[in-house]
Image (cartoon, rainbow, N blue to C red; front, side):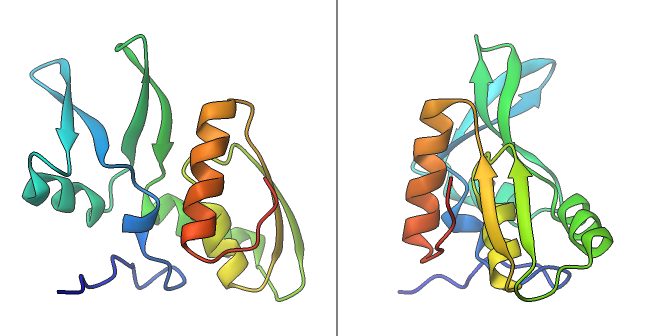
Length: 136
């Protein structure tokens, strides 16, 4: 069975699911709790389809180190940028790669910079899996 893509009407049709890792974190009762796609697909899907940002990496289990931005925030930034095909965009903080993929889908030439090597590697893999040709 093929899953329906997780896209948002205010953004280009780039499936958020491709960019959100199998394990994400949420705060419940003041504590960080891991939500695994493999353990609780329903809860993971609710997070991925929400308009909320999603914590994708924790630093020392206490503070978000990387996230998938809120679709509304991304849409606002992209709208303010007034992206046109061929525009060159430098993105600082690749994170999951989803924002870079959305910019690419709008026809921008995207160079995205991520200082954390592990996060950059995951973003590269996500972008390749999505078929995006972005340099990170």
